[in-house]
Each structure stands twice: as C-alpha cells, then as structure tokens.
Figure (cartoon, one colour):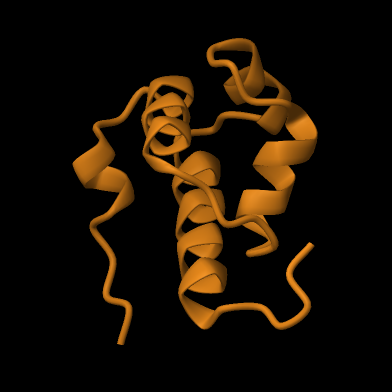
Length: 76
C-alpha cells in the first residue's frame, strides 16, 4: 500500500468505482472478466494501487469499456 496516497490515484479509483456502479457491475463480475483479482480491483478503486498499462487494459476489458473511457477524467 502507498504510504501517502497520490491524489491522481484516488481520483482515478473514484472514477472507476463510479463507472462500474453506473454500469451496474459488481467487483466480482469485473474480476471474472479479466485477469485482476477482487483485492486488486478494490485497491485500485480505493486509490491504494499504482499500476501499469496492462492492468489498465485488463480493467477496461473487465468493465467492457475502452481504455479511453477509463482515462476520461480531469485530474486537476
């Protein structure tokens, strides 16, 4: 876990959680559609996990959205 949370990770996690909820998908269902664990998904949504490009691709696959949709947020 990060000692100090990066606000960009927090905003991204909130965006992912909101998008997932808007789509009516549970965390376990996202995990079942991609190679991420429930623990990793929750860590991302809580802003606790810094991750790489392949994780972003898996997350978009699990949610059924494009990577661009995941990155469509204002970090300012």
